[in-house]
Length: 173
Ligand code: HEM
Image (cartoon, rainbow, N blue to C red; front, side):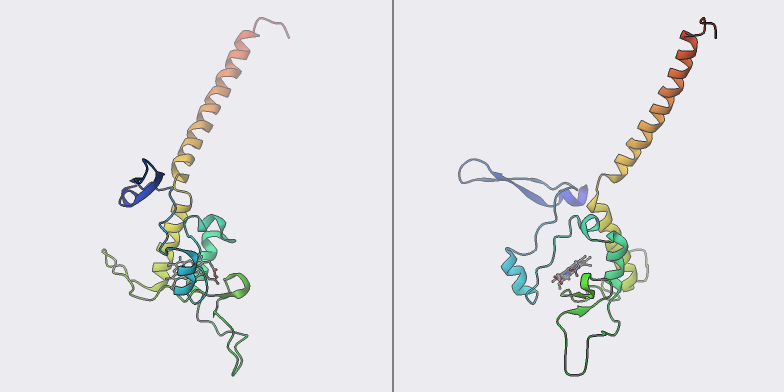
């Protein structure tokens, strides 16, 4: 919530000539790093990186496969024959086993405040956990609400059974 609020989100045209903004919320999409798809393509060897705001929901295989994708580079490419280099990077967890995304993580790319060793695998786990959270930012509160509703319905059901027995208690069986 606090992190999202550090970003400003345009709320569309207000008065003529003025654009209004509000603080970001967890359910907003990530701000696009490129001005246009063409700019994205130009900066990434012709491929447009996807919007990762809901990637843990929309990527087939979900967070488990994203984690595997981020840590799955480096295996020998079965299509790489001497003299022939296929486009992109071989990754057994990418769709079609090939992706235009270069390995985005490396050891010691960040420093953890608590001294955790910053291996690429640890970074991948943290990034994936974050992406899973932002893909469904209200999952925790919904789950809590669901448990509350289920308990309430159980209580109501017991109450109704007791009430029914009391109401019909004078009727001979
Ligand atoms: C840890 C941060 C990152 C995560 C979690 C991430 C995640 C993903 C995912 C899940 C995909 C879709 C899978 C695919 O199309 O193969 C993707 C695609 C892509 N990413 Fe990343 N990415 C990250 C960082 C980067 C960086 C730093 C770059 C640029 C240097 C980049 C460039 C791309 C491109 C160009 C694609 C499209 C690949 C294609 O169409 O084949 N990504 N990314």
